Image 1 (cartoon, rainbow, N blue to C red):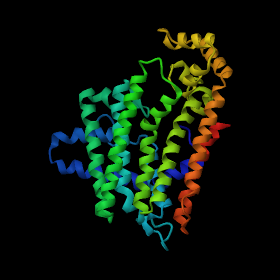
Image 2 (tube, one colour):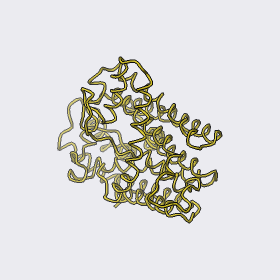
Image 3 (cartoon, helix red, strand yellow):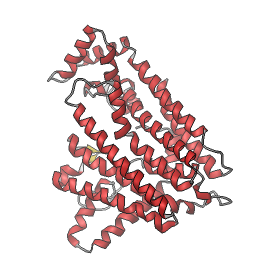
Length: 372
């Protein structure tokens, strides 16, 4: 994902706090094991997170965007940050302590799913480095992913050490558990769709709502729960997370077909070359005339690689079925839903809250650019 300057600045604001909390969490658990043989086990986690190389020596690598923990902290701020920012210096971020354990928890949850996804999809590279399973083998990679899942749940209870009430902590746990089940459902559907020829656009949207959007919704919902007890605010920010999660995936689907190589940093129409069953092809299959439908089915089911000429055929069919316009309109609907949710959040006279809501609107604007 090529980010705008505004979005990069927003993601950087809390990056240090999130990264420090992540490292502290993992170091504390690893040191508590007191078994030298487990150093490599926790080293594998550090490798996946981009902190060490294959020899487990410290390195500087791409740690990922930390989008989900950042969204959690933004929602926490947007909901009022439990009143901890009232009259505080805007440069003093000590108020974040209440929410950092939850932010770390959602980032670890996200990464455990990535470890397992890499195995299930047979991906050999992530963030320009070999995936964990290609280095330490599938069994240990599965086990390390499981460990990261357990660490994510264990870490969440750290909110109790930072002033979060027991009933709120219990509800946070329930939200996270529900979400993990939804993400697993989404992954199941995604894998099962690979072998089926009867997948509709609506089925795909339901799948990405689980696999991709659920954890975004969870992040925003948990952040809001840490920031306020107002049920309306929590629901609105959860709705924002759901809409933005679906929108991010549909944006990727659009760019995967129509972005230039310079914009995407990848091959133009790369999703067509890979025969990826994303929203554009599923819409085209539903709307194509019999002749075009047969052409699409032949291309997407053939054994040989897709040729340049066939890609042009597919793009021409997309044009005839107005597929790009459909995807853009659907993306705009998600962006409008995100804006509506933000506009309904009660106004709080706080610099931190105002800044957070502005950052969240900038996030929507970044995605919305793909509709033009």
